[in-house]
Structures are given as structure tokens and as C-alpha cells.
Image (cartoon, rainbow, N blue to C red; front, side, top):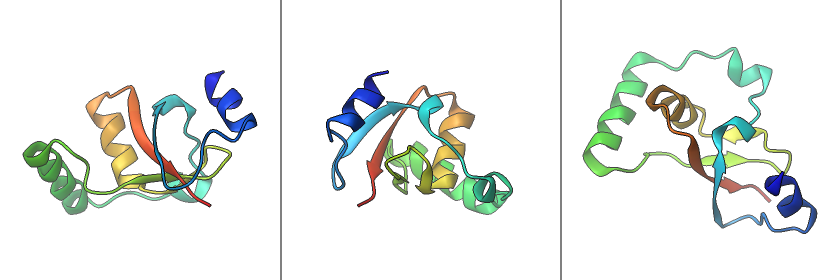
Length: 90
């Protein structure tokens, strides 16, 4: 609900980090059909464990559709995290 209100007033602007509930992110059929490689996911897991941060940003469009960062999104789901830092594209 708050996400829709923020979008309506232009709150989500590109270049800023926003924390949103992962359930609000929509995955396109194109991304859903892809399988992220095991080596890539393991590298990203290791990076997260060593730094406490994700290696790649998650980028959404204004409709909350994932544009970039699918492997990070997959790790967030794997780790059972409820919220995720995202950036919005122009």
C-alpha cells in the first residue's frame, strides 16, 4: 500500500536506495525462465558472507518489475530475507 502511495507522489526516484518488501517485486517471464548458474550464486553467497553486502544492486522499473540484479534477488529469497534495498531506473 505504501509503495503505491510513494509511486503516486513520485517518491521513488532514480539514484536513491529504497528498502521494500521482496514480495512487491515482480519478476518478468524472461527472468523467471532463467536459471542462475551455481558458480555465480556461490560467488555471490561468498561475497555476502564476507562483506555483509550484496555484490550487485537490484534495479526496478516504476512498476516494480525487476530490470537488473536477478541473482541478488534469488539470494535474498534463498536467505529468507523479507526486505531488500533496491534502486529505480530512470
